[in-house]
Structures are given as structure tokens and as C-alpha cells.
Image 1 (cartoon, rainbow, N blue to C red):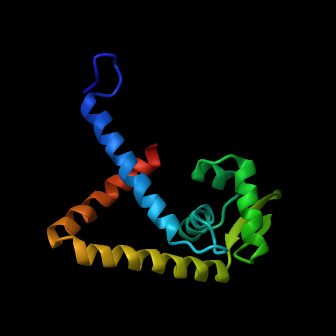
Image 2: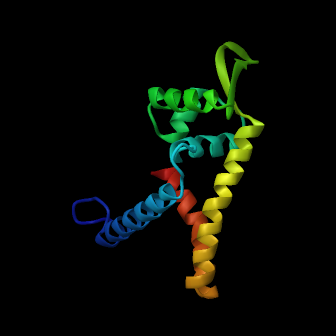
Length: 150
């Protein structure tokens, strides 16, 4: 249903606003779980994408992460300095570079993921009923789809 001006209706706008606030709060809490000097939230996002989707080019990473190419280069430089990613010539086109997560990068990702997952699991177990936990599980595919579309 559309609003009178052809834009989103009031219910969609309110839901979007509430989602933005809730997701923003979650993102801030996750960022607070990152220690000074560890991989950053953005670096973890790039490592996670490389781990899930496999080797890719910096341009494709920038597009997938919705950042400018210059921003992805800065992130990749930082990750490469610490040995968390490798860059190599694209076997199909030697003019391009392919980025791959290293074993150390996978370990860092696993360790950081476990820290965040443990914090969430503790909160879920202590403060959410089984039906509430089930509702959250059911909403996950919808949130993933929304993330792909925004």
C-alpha cells in the first residue's frame, strides 16, 4: 500500500524507523565488544564476506559492502599488513587483483565472531523466552533480505 503522495505508507515508515533505531543500537553494542587494536567492525565485515563468498576483487568488495573503492583499499591495506588477507593476480585477467582471506584472517574472524555470538547467546538465554527466541530466528531471513535490498 502506498501513501497519499505515492511514497511508502505510514505503517512502513514507522516500521522502518523502529528497525533503524533497533539495528543502530545493536550495531553500537557489537562495536563496543571490539577491543582497541583489534580488527574493526568494518574490517570484520570484509573478512566475513570473503570467508562466506570466497575470493573477489576489491571493486566487487566495495560494491558488496556499499562503500567507495578508496575506503575498501584502506581497509584491505590494513588487513593485508596484519596478514589477514592476501592479494594476488586474477588468474583469468592478470591486470586485476583478487583478495582472499588467509588462515590467520579466518581465525581472527572465528575468535571475534565467538565473542559477539557468546554475548548475544547469553542475553537470549537470560532475558528471552523460548517463543521470543523463536520469533527472532524466524525474522532472520527477513532481516538478511532487507540488508540486501537497502
